[in-house]
Length: 397
Ligand SMILES: *Cc1c(COP(=O)(O)O)cnc(C)c1O
Image 1 (cartoon, protein in one colour):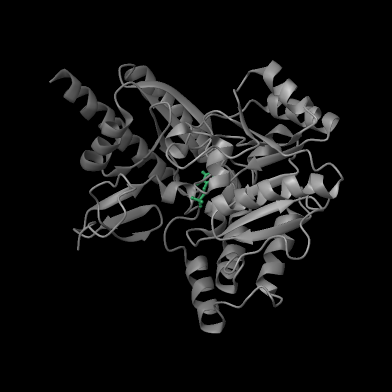
Image 2 (tube, helix red, strand yellow; image 1 turned 30 degrees about the vertical axis):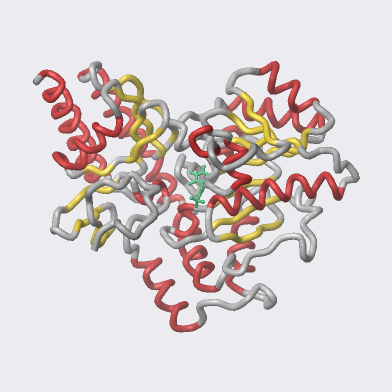
């Protein structure tokens, strides 16, 4: 076995993963790791959670897949849950985050067509954002390293800068603007949380001009910030929202949520998916959603996040040569480093057996399972501290 026959698009760590349980992962050589990547925010309940394992087993013996030409009870049940616990009235199920974003972008444009304003096609994204890898998603995020070499930029996609209020205002006031797309807390971009008053300001402006707000909560949603949805902290809501990652607890699922009004153009025949919302995915999704959406999990996120933040700020004081900033929200923790983040990640992995994820702006991210215990969090901090020491020693050598 080798990576010879895999398309070489990933920068893979030299770690062959074998099995997982809770916040632990074991490599094929038997080394135990503390997993603070959690599938990049996907395994919200850790590995092999008994409720999810049971849901997969039970459904696998019953029915895996049928076409969306039939009614699928699991889909209706999960959509009911999502709508009862959000701003949304309707849901479209996908297999991934980028497909959920794709559906959100299409929903926004179709809304304006249904409203008799087909000229509203412009979609504004923000710098530092990540929305996935389909054409619509890369154009919405407009990160040159993901768009270059893939043909001409798609028409009607534009970029805004965080904090450039004049440009944001001008964009929303344009009569050709369809929607803006925002991650309330950026993940890949380096754990930047958009200030709550800015999210409320966007809502007011968009309402004034009839522009839709799309939130991409693929990474920051599903309890990651300590509320079910990250935008709840701001006391406002979008018109359309993309969700995925932890919604499946490790099983591929995505969902595009919308209000009835925002989705008014999404009528029979305009969109679809073969696998999206299949019975097996829905069984796992329903189990993951109802387990995560409980005070036990959300309270734990807030408690553990508070502990990690306090400890990391303490480490920043002791290691000002290593840690530049501690940021993020809830258990979407970002640590901006002074040494190279990829080297730091390798050191943490090889010397402390702590798995952390990279991010923009030279950050590493800690995205542990939402049910991480205090003991595990203490261990994560000890291992992080060990990595800081190892990196400092390396720099001095
Ligand atoms: C991961 C991610 C996506 C893409 O999800 P995929 O399942 O990889 O397609 C989109 N948006 C955000 C914010 C993400 O973190």
